[in-house]
Length: 131
Image (cartoon, rainbow, N blue to C red):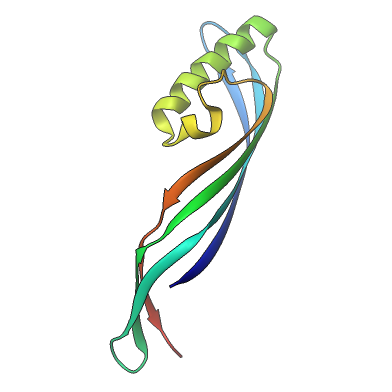
């Protein structure tokens, strides 16, 4: 039994050339996601051979803290830009698990950030070898 902490950081920058029948232009996007997980865990460790171990975490409730930041710039005019972001928002909702955790059904905008805190649960199995 013990506390745990995990930190993940993801960043992606994209350059897109958009050629649709409704609009044409270029788009640059920069998105970063920072995630902190804090909780407690309960598990056990089995020593299979002299150097091989199996760690099993049975229970690990915790709280995730998310911080999402996104910036975009484009050569699209205002009306085409709104249409593009509306279509992008629909595609992201269907393709990205947990998208509504970050955006919370708000319209996708050119610049923005979102923060969320959510309850989570972790369980895992690790296979280890001691040198």
